Amino acid sequence: MCLGIPGEILEVRDDNGVRVGKVRFAGITREVCLEYVPEAMPGEFVVVHVGFAISRIDAEEAARAYRLLEELGQTAELTADVPESDHDP
Image (spheres, rainbow, N blue to C red):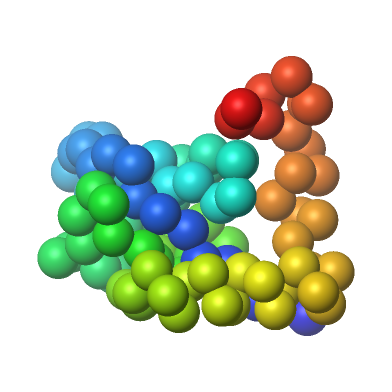
């Protein structure tokens, strides 16, 4: 099953007319399409599904959702293709 994962927007930029950003998920940073949440800004939290931010959420809800996903063992896909040396400190 595919789930949306909460993450914090670190930066936003235009990439050839597409709004994208760096989003941090508990120490892992990924490039995410932000076209579906045009009002989202750095410092805010979004729910990301298959590389697309699909909604904004507050920090408390993001933390609660991430803890639940960890308990269910659903966060492994975030690091599946990331070498250990690329994890944020």
